[in-house]
View (cartoon, rainbow, N blue to C red):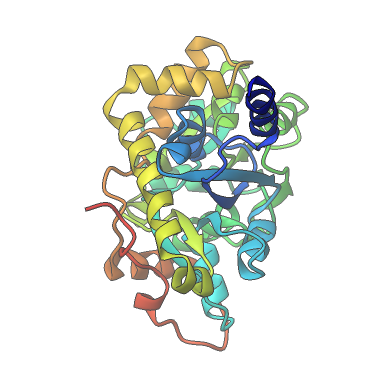
Length: 326
């Protein structure tokens, strides 16, 4: 009898952790602070709490994450709604089902010289300071470059032309190095890059998009959880569980800043406590407590992006609130 128990114990030891949990594949863009709810859900085992076994992949650039969702290599993609709209005008549908952030996930940071010159200036005057400058963004035609194009057009600058672009990727050290080597005058990076540039004494916030300083970029559908329509139809229970995990993580981050900061510090162990506090205070402004989306927000996002393509957009098909917690 004792031999049977030993054999059973040995067999159980061979079973993978989380046996019985439903696997879910998630793709995320880089390692930006904006994905805080993902990191908290992972650290606090909220996926497991809701019966999921997460398999998380990090890719460099939204285009790769979008492709993973479109080809159903993953169940869920953390993507900006920009990618949903850009795909829609090309006749390719993916669906946002949880609004993580309702404002941009980056500010416009600039050299110390430009920041000093911008004191007491309005939005248009700050944008004008970028004329003749070099601006770093994560990728060509990404959301950062698109927002810059909107601001340039609104305040009578041309892009390309009046502003030169530099494509620096998603990782923070690249932006610190670019400012240190005088390769850029401004940038629209993901945090914590802006804070790292600031704390290196190389610059600061020129335009605080994340606080709502620019009215065009408030109350949007910005960073979302997305899925392929087939996944929406075939795996509704899985998407409900993912939404529950993210909603709980988001509430923790927003409602308990002290604990939220401690959890994010674990995700970025190389950052000083002061840097982590600063980044949290900046980014926590964009995380939503209510992840619901509506057509007014969808149209406002389209209004500044203006994606070009042969297909008109049926907005209600690009997002759904059906998987959100009651």
